[in-house]
Length: 192
Length: 427
Image (cartoon, one colour):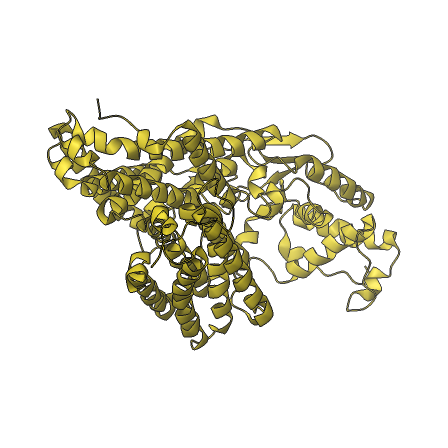
């Protein structure tokens, strides 16, 4: 499993966490303006978007042939990939929680990764493409307001979003791992 | 002829899907909440180039993905044996840039055509602002190609998009030179045009950065390319360095006042004129101003013959002055408040741009409020205040309010602002 984690990019997850911490420490409380957006954007707004764009990368199966021949079930593989991505996101969210004004942002870090995992489930390696314009729309919509307390996400909604998106991702992984023409439940397995 | 093939972009249906993705990504910043660009062809064109804000990072990600695939294949080694290896290396990048450029041109065509179709005056000669934007796009695609070629792993693709998007943000906030900012004006561009030198510097910087990034993406091939390629890239890089120093100081000067302006008018009493490029609300505004002006005429006030949209920095005491915020200038309709405020300024006095109370007396602000409200009350869009210092005056019959209205309007029309007085119940 260690080799798999390395192949999926555990080092890059660590790098993203490091970059996110640097961004939080240097720009999170800064405000800036972008063209056509009238209100000032709080640096905090960048954190969930950038984390989602980069941390979801381990969720992309770059070697589906290997996955098809894996000894473990696709669900376990999907959950392991999710665990890797969410491990990074939880560290970033935790760092947000203990930063001034960052309490509201923590839930958005996890929610944005949930969104990215759905994108990865639907369009695989191109998951980032819709997230770029969504990031701009997010900055546009939240300018001047994020991360006010009114943005707080209820815990139940957060848990539901993460759980729901994880089910979608795991389901998509199972469907992709099934060889064409083979009915469900008849998946080829090898002895470990 | 391995040189100029662009099969790396995939079969036609994949290219069509990529084009659709690029257009979709670029439309997000264009189709923002109120779409004010519908009110001006110039703003629509500017907004079309603003699509590069999100389209550029997506194009960079695509370029990154393509060059990862190329580097992980045997093609670079094959290219080294080709007659023109450098062109062969550039071809996929040019292909991605071509697709992305087509997407930008389609978006610009969409915004300008829609704006023209709903009545805006078109300025097709201003399409020259698109090529500099495409040069910036080339730089973004080249950055994606550079990342893909150097990293050689598909995980780099979202990183390329993120890096290019961050470069745009840093360029827009002034941390980096303003090379990567395209479009995105927040004003009306009425009486203004695009500042050609800024766009020329931007184009030079874009081409130079694109050339430099592509050279670094596969130095071994660039090194053995022809002297023309190497010389042109070197010159472009030098130009880019100079341009970036220029853009550091000039990045905000993307727009300048036009040498001449033209008006479109709706004849009547009064005649209402707006700048030719922003006439969307003209019919509605002139109708509302005519309706309100009946009350001034009933009071015996003499209206100026013409009310004009103001050209910033140019006082015009001979015409009335349309007081409109940017969103009102670009909107399809205006509210009665805008019409009343415009009507209450029958001359563009130079004093209005002064902060000095000796030039612009404090009483003007209150007088202006009362006059605007009086117009709205006559039209039934406001109710007369029943309390406050002027309650007695508001309670007077309309005919007894007319002398103050007449005297005030005459003073405003003649720019005798120190002659303004608040109304009293004895007036």
